[in-house]
Image 1 (cartoon, rainbow, N blue to C red):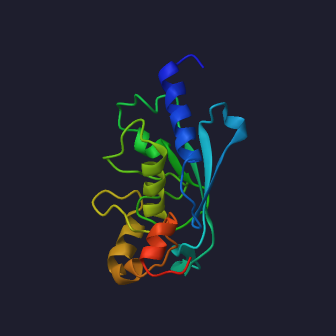
Image 2: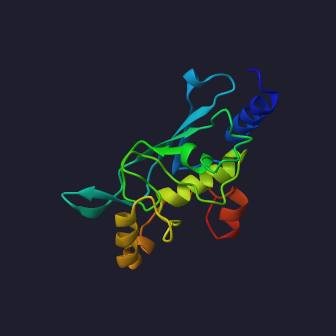
Image 3: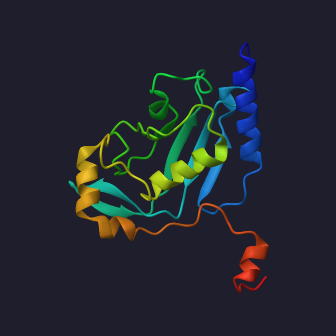
Length: 177
């Protein structure tokens, strides 16, 4: 790889992924065909309620959601504002204001180049669980209108926690070991 900064960023991302805590909600795997270090990852979210379109209406679903992270060559240095639209894609269709029908996801204006794995995965989880969504400038205005009209239902969606609590936290909360 000719860009040492990009290579270092990819290596840091791979190290971050390897050090992630356990999760029942998320499975992450590097795409072996995307280089070494990898520039693409597959995310599979399970145990997450979300909305999907069925017969012209939105229904709650718990089907697994497949996403893809792609860390493009300008991931560390992009300055043109397109990066928040190019890093995360939904491969499973679902209803969300930040999601286009083609799978493009907007990570928002605050998304920055060279974001590390854990915050990016947390943001993907926030979108998958509908804990975060755009109301001012959505990619899908129809989804935004649905979310605003059904805010109580959106807030009632259930999801596995992203990371499992460490044993000490579970024992401290009264769970048996």
